Image 1 (cartoon, rainbow, N blue to C red):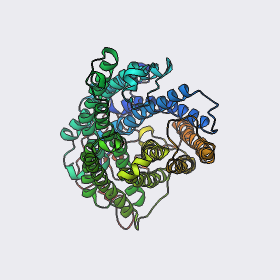
Image 2: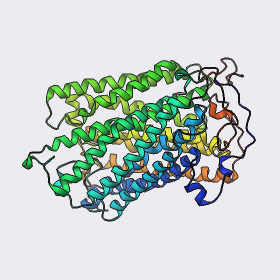
Image 3: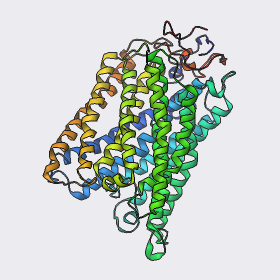
Image 4: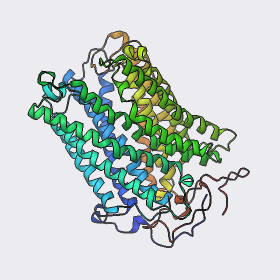
Length: 541
């Protein structure tokens, strides 16, 4: 893809200083990526512990592990932590932070101090959010729906939404930083259509972050004002409209789905060409599809409100738009499949994660079309079908891609290789455990089991036991990478600069990279993903 760059003799970014202060005051985008990585991993396991309690509770119909009130707090804690403290920042703030400057040939992000500030803001928001959950919890669900959250809930709603409000500023700063960096700091020759698709995906995600997150901030501020001051924004008795909250919330939260899944698509678009040893099929269509998903994603929020009493004509428009957003998503799935066709495929751990992402995202996307159909949605709203669909996209999709990205770029980040066989075992275990956990929930939802109930009729128990059994396999699958990746940091074989023979600029510098990424600014001479069609190796420059 690019002109070769001599590996710099400079010491790596990991050796620039070993004290805690050197890490907490760093302006190096790679070290800030590590700060995010440690933070979101901790939040992931806290959210996962809440999910474990939920599945243990649902193993029996009687609801005999926790009370109904505790159960409400558990699923709220799980949702709030996983959505805002893990899924939204997961790929952009870790891999995006680490890789974006290197992928475009830059020395750092445009605003290094702002980058560090975004992490401190994220941690501050996380402390507020965790504090609300520890000091009695929140029972509104992660969506904070009115009028329950404004008039009836006696839990720590204000503290929780303050935490989410603060985290939003971190997202805005990260998005702003990425946009300015891509526009102003590309290496000579790095035109827009030579950008790696991972950069395209994070660029589109950044636009959503900057445009949509302020709407969430305003919505939460209005909710707090309504709860504290009773000023009649959402209360019908005072001239307000409770559905206004849903419109405002989902105007942010549906694009937020693409904040979570677009970077995952970018990851798949890097891993699949590398391990199929082929140029990505339809590069320009892939780039345009990313922008199409980001654009149309702002127009479909009303499909969350088909049973809310909104106009049937409005619902029809939102239904059509929801089907429309599936077109660019389908383009990406077909193009990944075409990239694999007649490729020299290596089933490495990153490739298994990427293929798992494509399969699970496809199932999630197809069931999304089911929910976009008005008549079917009336039956399936607020059932476990919605839970299964959401998790196939977010967990099956985004988390699989996130783990694939960590495995793919781990040698670059640490200079060490992990045990490949354990990586494959973990990928397969997560794929199997995930399907065993969430596919029975499609059947439960189809049969009418409502979500957010801690008790259920006995005829649903078999499928719930299958789901809980799958969750135990999934938990082991998530713990495995934590173990062998930590092990590899000390005992793993040393990685060379390009162990996968990939074509991206980030692979043309040392592993781990020096502080300023490159000894001299690289010059880009070719398009991305230029693999030799005969040997499958990256094309020599």
